[in-house]
Image (cartoon, rainbow, N blue to C red; front, side, top):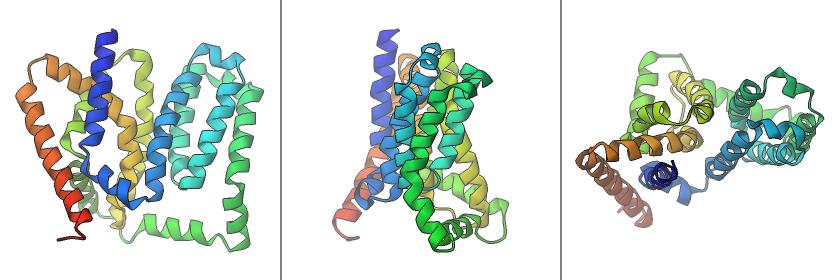
Length: 253
């Protein structure tokens, strides 16, 4: 209902505001910072393209092409999100969607937007792609690196996001496929972390995609009487965020 949706939206915003590492990205202005906002837009546009009416309209596909192109300009790893979007749209519309001229128009727009990246790399021995692949691969894959990466994720983004699990189960069924925008990129980064060189902020856009489900789960938990637990977690994450902001604003002092 509308009341549950409003409560879920409020908790979604709150859980992002209380994710400590997102404050670092807000100051550090890394490529992932741009992807945070673009991920929200991509999630909304994916939901639009999952609707039956999308097959008869050109504008939504054009918008998606622009968003994908901008995401590709922001960071190469946006290709993982693009794969998740394809899973959602094809899952909702079926393979017949591949016959839509508007879809291919959107892909052409995305390709034109990222063309400067491709042209420059082609002229320079694909140096930036080679660097990123080597950085992501790391050295010898070890399970201990993955476990350390997952623990770090829990600490820097906060345990409140774990409420996405019950939130996904209680969310309306048509919305559930959007979870792929979290799952596909996150699983890839988690596997890559086995090489020992993955950085914790790489998954920030994935957590943003998960946040609405966490918001839904937190709103449900609040109604079920888990208020002391949620207040405690929120307080701890607020303190962690405040400490990080204090460290950055004081240059470490």
